[in-house]
Length: 161
Image 1 (cartoon, one colour):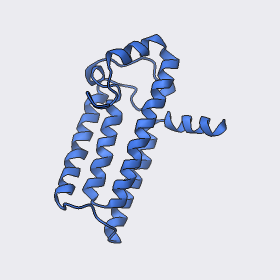
Image 2 (spheres, one colour; image 1 turned 90 degrees about the vertical axis):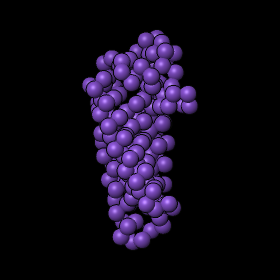
Image 3 (cartoon, one colour; image 1 turned 60 degrees about the vertical axis):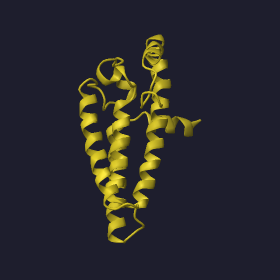
Image 4 (tube, rainbow, N blue to C red; image 1 turned 120 degrees about the vertical axis):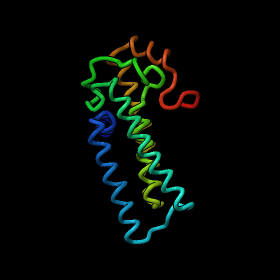
C-alpha cells in the first residue's frame, strides 16, 4: 500500500519539479551522447530541425495554455477550481501535451537515440499522471469534473486521445 501511495504522490506532485528532472535527464543524455558518439537518430539534420520546431511550438503552446490556468504549476491537491476556458475547452490536459511535445523536441534536436528513449518514457509518465490526476479530480470535484469530462472528451489530441 505504501508503494502505491508513493507513486500517487509522485504522479500528482508539482509538475515543475517533475519536468525539471526530465529536462536534466534529456539534456544531459543529449550532451553525453554527443560527447561519446552514442547512436544517432536517422535523418540528420531534418530530425534536429523538426526537434527544434517541436520544442519551440510546445513552449509557445505551454505559455498560451498557462494564461487560462493560473494554478498550473501547483500540486493537484492545491487546485481550487476546474479550468474550462481557452484551450481547456477543447482538451483536458494541454499543459501535459505541451511538455510531451517539448520533451520529444529536445530528444529529436539532440539527435541521440538514448535521449529519444528517455523522451518516450516521459510520454508514458505524463499520460499516467493525467489518468491519476483525473481520478483525483473526480474525487475532489465529483459531478462537476464528470460533466467537464463529458463536455471535453479528449485528454490530449482531439479525435485521437
